[in-house]
Length: 181
Image (cartoon, rainbow, N blue to C red; front, side, top):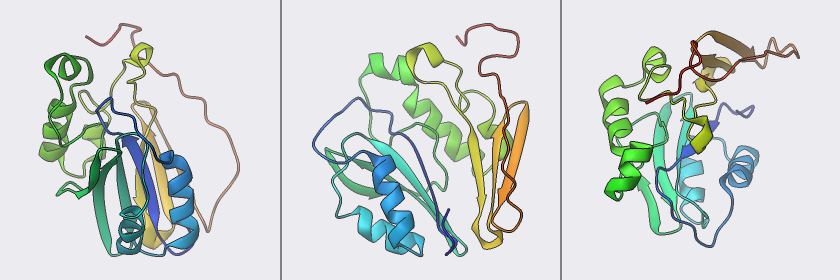
């Protein structure tokens, strides 16, 4: 989040495609340093090649928008206002079995902006050994200059007005140690 009230986040785009372009964390840093609004950031994103499919959610005090970007597609807007490692395009059946991208897209659309739903399967994934585990869910409130990071067992809030450095240790994985099926 920047001091203008623009917040950006990314999630894996749900498809295994690689191409020429930039890594999205670098692009998001650029957007935060040069843009004040979600619309301005979307306009900039349209001009930047992205190396792998990702979902970008942009939030400002007046608007929330999620877009899909990738090396093989133009920036594509979506009606969703949050993202959870899914893509709007179909994937091969085997990849769907592993990533559950279409199942997750349906779950995002059913849940809307619901933090509790984001902390349960299928939106919160525990498949860390396959690089598909969820690290956290971020809830941005840019008009207040606040963000809250959520895990199933903990939350941690930060703000521009009351930031305190600190640490929080979170154990990733199912609470009882089972693998997610």
